[in-house]
Image 1 (tube, rainbow, N blue to C red):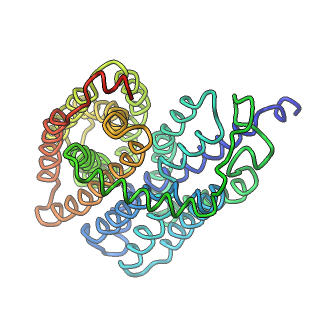
Image 2: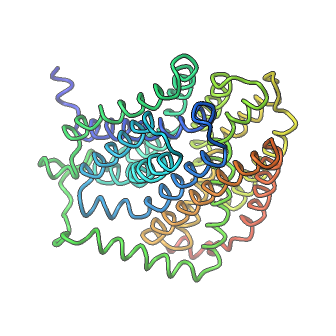
Length: 424
């Protein structure tokens, strides 16, 4: 017991943060395996369910750049509690919905706001405030939360849907989110100084700004100013377009439509979900490896390689999907996992190199928003293609060609000269 009490509070805060990110990942995992059961039960079309996912992804992405401002203004703990409440409400009420507009409201708006408020910036803010040492490790663990959530919850949700129906799976996510609310309220604090502590690894408490009463609104206004300035540069649009394609080719089509596509070929949801677990496992390997490579290789070249390999995998999918799980499909899943989040470290590095440390972080927030908007368009367009054509073949080919385009655009990004990087 004494040994537990000696653990720095920062590690308990980190654990709770990880659990919040896991809860968000649980919903992200549930969408793909719930689409077909909802359609079969309520008689809705693929375009209707795809619209709800698209709205969710747009609001998720647009909320993310302002999440830090909201946390500055209202506090990390309040925003985390509010986000979990929105997740619980949005997923719980889907069990009693009767009209398609309710799915758009619940999945799209409420859950979109909840997941957007617990995006990458949430973990980064906690790590920056609570840790001086081991900060990189903590950020890496937070980044792996999505993969872990998918790894843990996809098979559970798929099996639950198979035996007890999609409403049970939705209620499970709601209960998980609601159960974390008192934990967050008890353990989470905005800063170590609130408890009279220094950050983990620091010798003294950092000085706070003299006046932070309106810092959130100033941060929000500053984010818009950075967007305005960055939008005048060619590099920003290349980064935004390539990352939008990244969202299109991951969250937009794989997360949202891979399980339904496998269903079209007679593969059960549990089996299809197990394939996405492979993606989750190799995602951890790919993300860590990409960070290591980004310190040693031109990030533009890495992005070109990642997008090219992803394009090849997407173009191959229509030819290898079938009622049986063959080795080529397993190879594609491994490839998806290795480069799923591998695009993040090179993109973050380019934002920092081109726009500086402070502004680069905000620019990445907007580039991340483009990622989710791209994912939203992919979710909607892929659903419409499925309705119009009767299968996903055209959607896979479109995504593959876009990935190849992103590879070329990545090489067109102008990187600062070496001496400028050294000076920065």
